[in-house]
Image 1 (spheres, rainbow, N blue to C red):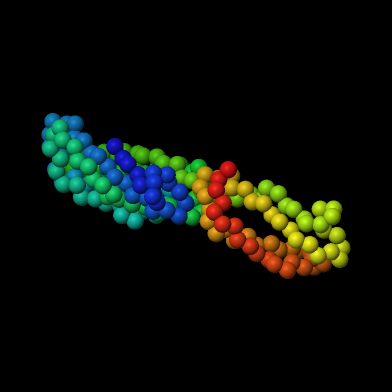
Image 2 (cartoon, one colour):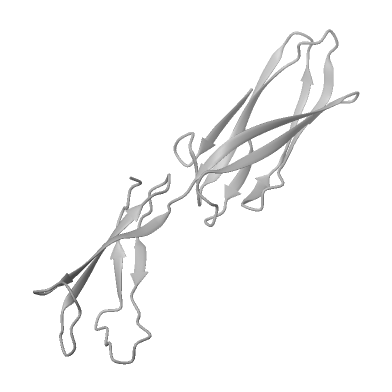
Length: 173
């Protein structure tokens, strides 16, 4: 059985380091000797930091709990809802077993919800100076802190006085 800790909970999110703990039960009639645990993954959205753990021997009918024995970083650009499959290879002196574990990773998905133009008609008119407010929506599965938004225009007749602003702690909807 596998247990995951990612950040300060069991939810895998972008930018976090996740660690795995395993309970290995030897349900056979023969002792397992020189047990080695190795993880791998084909996901381009994680980096394995510590992928090996020497377990030692596990007597027949016994189990061993190995806490926080392997770890991986979740990349900041992982898509929301991406399934990460971790292959755990458990081997001893005589046998080898590959066991897949899958985890869903969460990330923010930022969208513009509304744009407000603070004037009489809600439109940008020639020669007018006005404030624009933009409401962002997080349609993803993870909060984002300190989002920097930059406003630009390709129209040479539009001047933007303040080009950026920060959004703090945008929780998922």
